[in-house]
Image 1 (tube, rainbow, N blue to C red):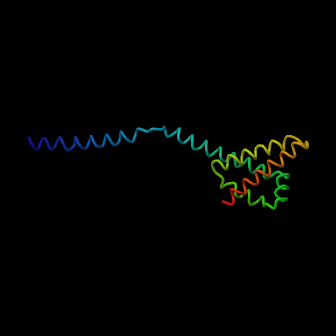
Image 2: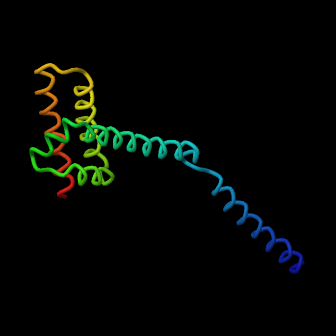
Image 3: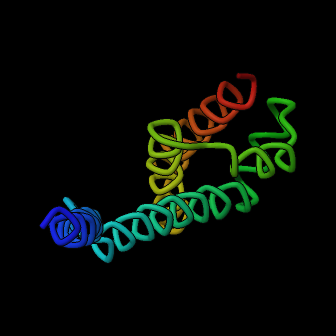
Length: 131
């Protein structure tokens, strides 16, 4: 009887411990596909923001203001990839405003507003690069 109990209890304990570990690995709090989609969407948004900033720095008006301030736009362009989080969002917002103004037209009010936006963008980038 004792041998029969040993033969039954050992495999039963083994089967129960393996099945509970396997079942625990199948359950996820967040769906892996949803998590991957969220991460890829966040990365795509950051790259879109960086592209907007690069576009703004590529405008001749921006380069002229940067040259007047003594700022190297090539150095700023290379520093764009280091921007993350709120710094990236603020710089991208300023760059979008500058791009919109530069494409929008050439009235005196728009040009002065554009110049202010460009200067703010450059100052923001300089502060981030200095950190």
